[in-house]
Amino acid sequence: MGTGRAAGRTAQVRPRATRPKLRVLVCSDDPFTRRAFSSGAGAPDMAVVAKATLADAAERIAAKYKPDVIVLDVQVPASRALTTIQRLHEQAPAARIMACDAPTGTEFGLLCLIAGASGYVSKEIDLATLPRLVRSLFAGEAVIPRELATELAERFVSASTRAPAPAGRKLSVPESQVLELLRSGPKLPEVAAELGIGLATAQRHLGSARRKLSAHRLANAATRDGVRRIHQTSDRWEVQ
Image (cartoon, rainbow, N blue to C red):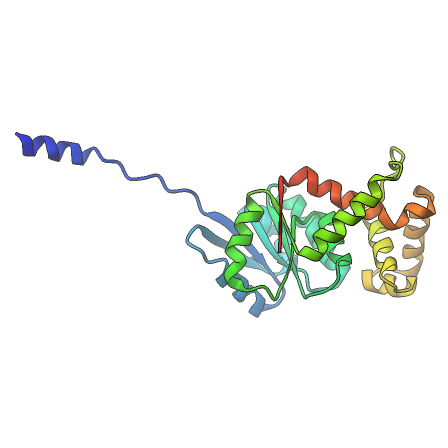
């Protein structure tokens, strides 16, 4: 009888519930980069649900697969990368976007954050660290390099001492793009070429921005929007 009771108890043991895997979408126009990121995100608690080019991901893949995290190669023309981030944010608003770029300065990283990315990292990171970054992003952290975190902190402190922008005068994304690129040195025709727009369009964006903001606040306007977005969507920062 003792043996029978033991057997009965054993039969009642239930298997442990498994946690759902993080759904990862890998986007790059370069096949080698797609394979590398997909391999790096192949942790036991993750599933790469799709690999796609930027255009395919922005048009249909993100909405179809509803990923938790999107690993996005943004080493393409700036205007295309920022437009893709915006489209992905529209297609999969719950997804966290990690923009991966060649090592550059902080200006383009700021624009990616403004466009809707929650993370900005170098494509030269050790792929062994990619699962940890994906988990951090999914947990609500803004994964950014140390120099970008320093830049954001300095600009936020500087902007916080100035008067807030008048209601209804927030810069549009194209206006922010033009201003940020101008701050890095190029002249307006070069900025227009970088963004893939006509010179007249770039002049219109610049003129509109000047009408919205006083001259002494132009340098900080786009950054304030970026910092505000991070604070609204992220509880913590992970600094690389």
